Length: 275
Image (cartoon, rainbow, N blue to C red; front, side, top):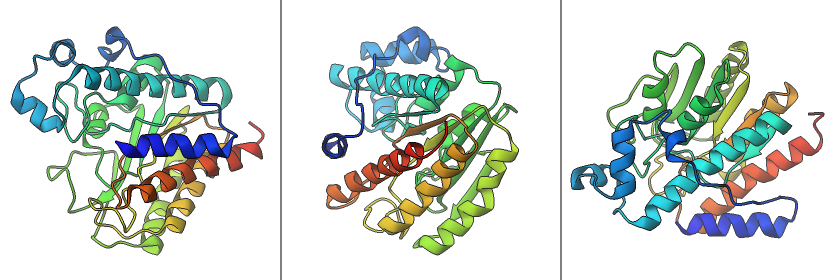
């Protein structure tokens, strides 16, 4: 949890970001994507102990507040992207949450909620967290208007994968060159799909220093990844929403710095873009 504070402090120190707290997502809005009974049980603290173990957090009122705020952050970032071309949130990317259950530190699926709420004609989800976005894949497996792309570790969690529209599985210790080559092979398909909006899950757990990632990217490799995704969206004037995702390096400062670099690159690109 410390990475969120460290990231915010880094961006505030940079001085070129307008950081605002988002309104928590309303239960009625979350219910556009998630099962109402599941939502009520989580909010009221009546989920079974096995369901909470699958999520990975102990239940608390603080967890409820944080979960609603995280979904609200992605909703606000989506609104900003629609209105201005770009929006970002310093949380979100909770891609392991399914319609009726949570998993892997994810309670509600923020991107699924945003897509259900704003109802774009076509949306693309570019998930570059090191873990497959199984919840997101399952949400939109049969929806022809949502393209889901996931680059992830083949041998990493979740061990029962779902089917994204495009899945790219990477072997352990994949480094910068191979990773970027894989990204270059699928990124053009995002724009061939002609989405109205792109959601970028910019997890940084592909870093070699990440204790859960199993890949071997460098900080420079992640920067190159971010420049590809953000730059191509800006060039095409496609509304872009950046959420976080995973990051578990030791020391955790490496994760916070990598997350900060994603937003710094976005600031650099959008400062020079006509959008």
